[in-house]
Length: 161
Image (cartoon, rainbow, N blue to C red; front, side, top):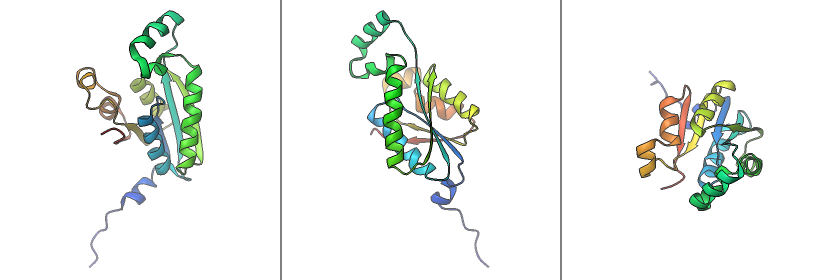
């Protein structure tokens, strides 16, 4: 009598029809985009999202001074389009063919979770950046908050070790 066979990872991944991945333009988040793209492949829709806060020039200048290399995260919508374009290129290079870009206003976790509902996503992919930081432990991080609050599967890609 044959034993029940568990589906392998590739078979389970092919069950996803809509995959959402968040990016902030960092190399870490682009690695998550590449992983999401390889899961979506040519069969699932890949929705690449970049959340941002519109802000006035004085706030941007002050935040930029404090954030240094992460300052791109506070510069409004203009950098978002470049981030999405770069992510799209990476996704195509990793095999995704049905790609949609979304620029969304608001905090990353809430924006991504709303988007997963809006597009009926069955998988949300995020990088692990911030997961093991002191700030992440105290205030929460995108990966941990998304994993707790999402109503779909969540894949946390190890992009930073």
